[in-house]
Image (cartoon, one colour):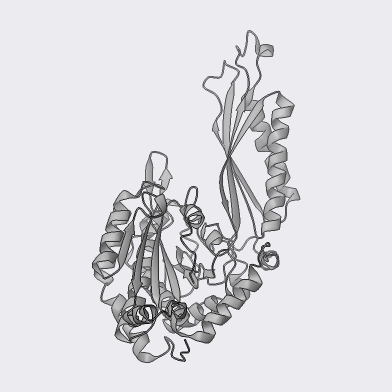
Amino acid sequence: MTNTVSARDPKIANDVKQAIDSETASLREVSLQIHSNPELGYEEVFAHKILTDYIEERGFTVTRHAYDLKTAFVAEYVSPAAKALIADGHEDQVRTVGFISEYDALPFGDARGHACGHNLIAIVGLASALGAKVALEKNNLVGRIKLFGTPAEETTGGKIDMINKGAFDGLDACMMSHPAPADVVYCTILSVGGMTVEYFGKASHASASPWEGVNALDAMVHAYNGLALVRQQTAPTSRIHCVITNGGAAANIIPDYASGKIMYRATSSDDHTKVHDAVMKVVNAAAEATGCTVKITKEMEYQPVPINEQLASRYASYTTDLGVKYLPRAVQETLPSGSTDMGNVAHVVPGIHPVYNIVGLNGEIDRSVSNHSFGFVAQAKAEVAHEASLRSAKGLALTGIDVLIEEGFAASIKESFEQQVPKGGSGLSSLEQKFKAMAGIGAGCGCH
């Protein structure tokens, strides 16, 4: 399929923008309803229903509870021009682009809330898919669109379960964007690993016979302190966090059980392995030193996000035209970040995960609000956050259309992906170079 047209065509671009603008009120309502009904990972029943109903009513074929996951879904649209090609036996001439919605919330003690703005990511996915669909329809263009509803990004990573079920196979690109206090396309998003550590000892009376006990809390504290010391020997681009979740029930009892949660991050797969190995040595040494036994339960392994150069530059170009003001790329690449299971998707198919500012539209980083805070919960329902979300969705939709209809662009995306993520290797060592200057810069890319 050879096609020189692109979403730069004024009519195509206008169709995308009008399609999304015409839905602004209904999209806002969806966002606010999800915000008012926060649900944790794999429990997003309300969000699953409202999102699938919305996109089905607008002409997509929806598979609910997809890939054996209760709150996952996939919505598909195949344009009439694409259906004609498929009917003639030319399915190989039909490209497919994916967009992603997330919708899980975060816990705050006994409460929960959208402190990472996933109510906004949910509607960015809807708007991107809908805008691209309308443009394909009105301009008789060839393409297939898939919108993926992905649960549990904040916990164990629903996208990983979906990858293992083949959800993203056959895509030419997959994209999403994330709310933050900054506009960043070239954000260095880290890998993350997580585990629950449990130490088992022997209880005894802490005054009458402490020598009879084996102190599980001592083991957990030893591990906590050991991890704090390991930090100074890890690369400045790495991160290790730990919290003690159970330290015993009473001060006069030697604890026979203690537990904690540990997370570790890095800019490359190789460095991720090094940090993981260092953490494991500390955890096991703490058990050995105190005479306890230890149980380690792995909870997540998110890859860093390899930014597809072609997709990123095209998205940046479109959103700049829409009024986004970006800091220089060299600055963007040094901004600190979190982690996301989108990294795992972007190791399977070409992808991007830009972030967009929901605090202001003037291009400045706003350090007054950061992801995973109470302030971000409030900001995620603000009108400016909605406006910023739809602006990002337009950029994704326009970029997605180019994936579908611009032959040379699609080929360059594939070439860039194969260079970045070669089979059998991460191809990501260059990310470490980009992240060296991150210390002290402040609020940046927000995710897990």
